[in-house]
Amino acid sequence: MIIHLNGESHEVADGTTVASLIEELGMRPELLAVERNRDIVPKAAYGEEKLRDGDVVEIVTFVGGG
Image 1 (tube, rainbow, N blue to C red):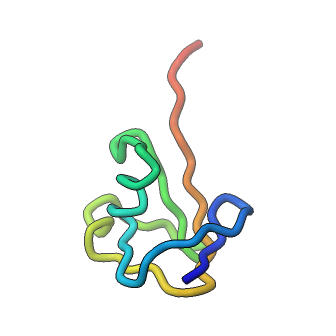
Image 2 (cartoon, one colour):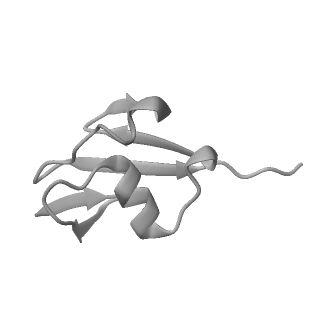
């Protein structure tokens, strides 16, 4: 199925969760905020939140520094 990830089409397998997407992308969940269809996904729900065809997902990475 196809989702829209940070403005680009991205193919994922059926049953992909937010957590498995983050793992697939090689990202660290503790440094991210995820929005799915304009709603923030709580970190505690990453493993349960299954993506659906056509979902719009935004992943924002926190960057430290001054």
